[in-house]
Amino acid sequence: MSKYITYVDLNDIEKLEIYQAKGAYTAAQLRTRLGCDYIINGGLYTMSTMKPNCKLKVNGTVVVSDNYNYYGPSWNNPPTDLAHRLLPPDLASIAYDNAIACFAMKNNGVKSDMVVNGADANTAIGYSTSRTAMGLKDGKLALYIGSDSMKPSALYNYLNGQGWSDILMLDGGGSTQGYLGAGKQVTSSRKVHNYICVYLKKSNSGSTGGSSSGSSSTGSTDFTKPNPYTKPTRAIQYGMTGNDVKWVQYQLNVHEVACDVDGSFGPAMLAAVKEFQKSHGLAVDGSAGPDTRTCLAKSHPDECIGEYTLANNPYKAPTRAIQYGMTGDDVRWAQYQLCAAGYIVAIDGSFGPDMLSHVKEFQADHNLAVDGSCGPATQTELKKF
Image (cartoon, rainbow, N blue to C red; front, side):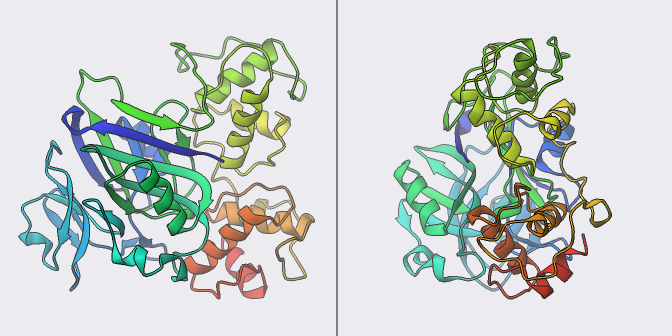
């Protein structure tokens, strides 16, 4: 589990773009396609229609408007004028080409009424799940992605504690994905409606500040080159050493999970392997066995996720309601189908807190009763993927 933050001086940004992918790309695919320096998923949308739900203005065109006033970031490019402002019903009337609304938690240093009034009680967004956010800190653009499950209040408390003056909570759960620098990535197979893309000025090689959790330095190695180490023929486990351990370490960096390539499987590598497994729907055991090595051998961070289909599901379909605390192959079936639907969860046969949050998110997104139990109605919906 991890939380990543990057801060970028507004004067270092060439363009801050809202890219409407409309379900065509994941963040990893889009970053490769566009060449942006940083990317995170954007606002809420309806999965069945791929239509955004919140106020949205892109390059001067109003995409979504409504009859209400909401706070949210607005800007022109280059975005030296980026700020949280009140977004009126008529977005065409504002002097900014770009604007996005979602769940404004803090505006110009003041906690929003929505947080004060208890966002956690909102059944549509109040459950614990992975989160994405953008905002401002000390006049810099602030970006956050995290695989840690958090309720809205916990996200607010965390980012407020980091000193953010403005906080916009974006879409979360299976939509949470992005890249905020080497070793600071959350992947998902879900292809969402819009993304926030940051392009730095050519003279700048990276962010002017930032922080991450669970990451180690990888030096100046160019991980776009072929892996020079021996591919393992054994399961690579904690405590092992050798060139085949270096192969795994190198491939983790190819997939933008930072890990020192020193040939020694220690605590930092264990955390990196588990992070990779978690983000790719693998059993999170910390061992680089056959499934993990097959996924690592892919040349692109996105190629080893999103291949799940009902026809390929190797596990037996449930004949019971799958509930919190259960174990077994029918739990694995449900976990596999969640991955097929874009809700990446470890396929380990154990119904724990992470699976619970993903089941609830799936239910909320598909207009099902949000009870966290994978009963007949939820199983029927999962079979569509």
